[in-house]
Image 1 (cartoon, helix red, strand yellow):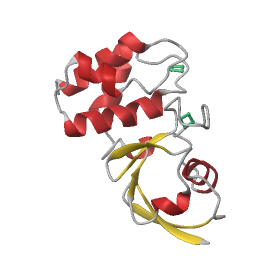
Image 2: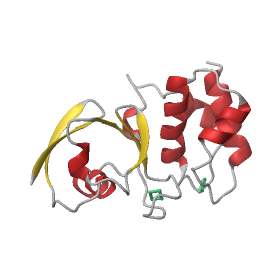
Image 3: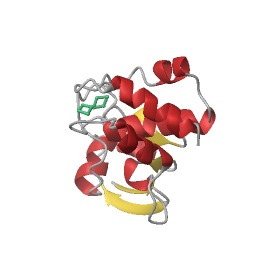
Image 4: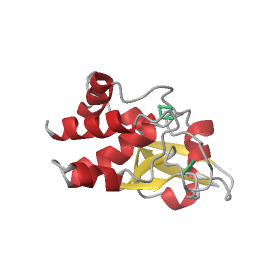
Length: 151
Ligand code: FES
Ligand code: FES
């Protein structure tokens, strides 16, 4: 089947099988390899993208269901040659080591700041609780999200 997927503000015609997952279509067909395949079953957050502004696990959604929605991946965060405040804050705080979780962390944090521009630490902890970091950078990650929220 042919889909027209809106990703990061652009429409991409793409041939997919009906059973293909959004994560696989983004990575393998559109070459958007920011979203990562960590667990493949909706528990790690590494594959997080935004669908009409809501964070979702792209490893759980059939690509066909994403047609007609605005999909946002980490590749679309930087604008006009400048990093997003969250990206700058992650760098300033050293909020990653291997970086595998980082695209999902950034997109989940963006969803939080879009609805709650100045979250409390408790709000950050709760909202980000579904995103796992195997390198245990949680303290720095939370600090970075709070810093980005400070503007
Ligand atoms: S790869 Fe999707 S939640 Fe882990
Ligand atoms: S920085 Fe390695 S998994 Fe988070």
